[in-house]
Length: 121
Image (cartoon, rainbow, N blue to C red):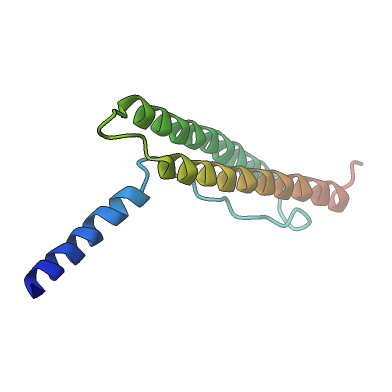
């Protein structure tokens, strides 16, 4: 009996993480910058990094949506669609979207601070 309990426990360890994971790769949040102290080249590099992050985030969100669509299409009467997958992916999309908005606001604040610290002559 003890061996059976160990096998069941190990089976849970193997299957639970698999259900909780997605094959989509989330982009890393770019570092915030202080617009009042950066150079123009550093600001341009930061803007470029943010644009890449935003594009990667769009790809990530698309991947999450396609993952749900694929799971729905593969569902059968014997193996119905797991709503937890859709719920998980929706939460991941929402979290990433909030991060996109935060990153956008941060870079816009840096641009404003840069312009204030370096007024046009």
